[in-house]
Image (cartoon, rainbow, N blue to C red; front, side):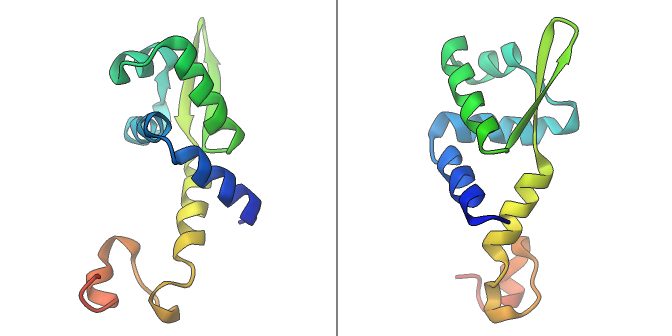
Amino acid sequence: MDSNLVVRALGALAHDSRLAIFRALVVAGPDGLAAGEIAQRLGLAPSSLSFHLKDLSHADLVKSRQDGRFVIYTANFGAMNALVGFLTENCCAGASCVAGDLSNVCGDGQ
């Protein structure tokens, strides 16, 4: 993964609202959520939501599609997995490990 894209993605996620939006979209899965539903769930004003979605989209973490009169947003799972892969690429001194279960591979998980 390109380090410039990594920096952009991490920068986009380094905000409470954008992180909450991204996490909500991850939970929603490939079906995604309409913009209004995201705003309602997170208590965000539409203008604020639009700003944050644009930032996440520029970082390639969020995709959108038109569904009738609604815009549906989904997490870009490929980009998310690439980011996690980049961050864990050299973990555990090069030993094969599962990021979710580092306690078994990396000592006591600290």
